[in-house]
Amino acid sequence: FSADPEHQHEANYCQQPHEGRRSVASNKRNCQRVTAEQQLLQKQMQDNSTPGMSSELLESARYISQAVKFGSQIMPTHRVFSLEELKEATKCFERSAFLGEGSIGKLYKGKLENGTVIAIRCLALHQRYSIRNLKLRLDLLAKLRHPNLVCLLGHCIDNAVDESSVKRVFLVYEYVPNGTLSSYLSGSTPEKTLKWCDRLHVLIGIARAVHFLHTGIIPGSLYNRLKTSNILLDEHHIAKLSDYGLSIITEEIYKHEAIGEGQRYIQNNAEELETLQDDVCSFGCIILEALMGSKLHRKGDPFILSELVMSLSCQEEREHVLDPVVLGTSSQDSLSMVVSITIKCLSVESSTRPSIEEVLWNLQYAAQVQATADGDLRSEVSSQAC
Image (cartoon, rainbow, N blue to C red; front, side, top):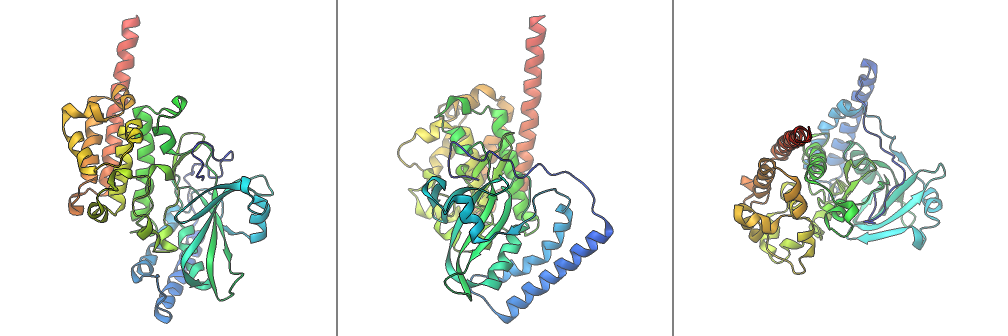
């Protein structure tokens, strides 16, 4: 994945998963391995109450057994990289390999000896972890495999300063080639314009990824830095979420960037920001940006989220708020469904927000309604031509 909004991978590392079946023997081996991992995590919790490793995270490790269900997905095997490999891939992390820097560390582009293009996140840890503790965390993160997640290919632990603890870790990801969703919605490049059906396709993909993070291998994997600049599109315009699950590595990440610096529309209200720190609300902000597109990006001053919700709620004001591309390529029914679920996601009262599963269902239904409307329109045009 890449911080470069214009250019990303030229190599597609993670192919779409192919459904298959594991043998009974393979499942048995996996279950035995999972049991060992559970025992190791529980022992870690009992023997060493390590700061930052919450009991909730450790308890949720029992769900790793569900990884067997996803084991048939064909993805590159997670492996350990040496620091020398990464230096060679980036030419010693020279300036030309530097892609950007955020609150969680620097990002580099590299090329392995076999020609594979990669993205390397240098993650600066806010507190020291033992190497054993960090490896347990990395093992959990490596199990988060999904077609709509940027594939974590491996990691490198840098413990050159102190052999007993580590302050820096490199995460090696696939490099996705077609830029961020934010760059497509900004309106800066006309050739990157996404029609409504395309935006729905992207939103559905990311909703599936978030649903997996919430209910899959490690339920409750929250604070996934959901924002349009962390949603990447591959050469087939398949959406992939990057920077997910990093709270597993360091639970302090979300304290620095709970919803993301890209969500300028809630900067003016600190109290509101604190009540909106969850993935469903952040996903609502992504849908809002998909609805508003360049209109949101053109606003120079931060503005209040509640004002936008009010505008969306009023049928007469929507056309002044929504992206003209959305208005011109969507059916009224499909658009209304998405606007409705967006308003629910952005509710200040967390108890009234929908689950990500409900959000996903509504988006899929809206896409079906839109596909039907598009089909009817094509039929009408075809009959008129005859």
